[in-house]
Length: 157
Image (spheres, rainbow, N blue to C red):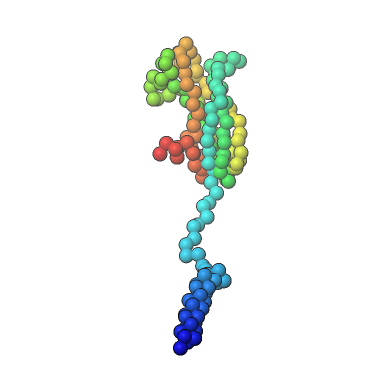
């Protein structure tokens, strides 16, 4: 009688062990279909302009020159990139006098290659209209482009 009882426990133990092995091994043996898929994003140009420096042209007295480093972090070329460089008048403490720029120079570039950084030059005429004894802050931004995203605008939203 005692032997039948041990045999019953052994059968139960091995049955449970076999079920556990099947439950663990089954997902590993048979590949499962992924129930969701994330569509691949289209490659897009991602631009960030960095204003390096700006100065008055000594040869053409009415001209200002902006040096801008344009970084494209995307995996696509940016085309028809319009860059606006603005001058904002500053107070003695460095704060802006007005949110509207006192001067704007613009230039359109045909292409900024993917995953690259290019040094670009934006020039503008008519700078003599400004009070050159005042302090100004120069900032450049991408105002428009084809099939691209301006990362600084994403951060502002």
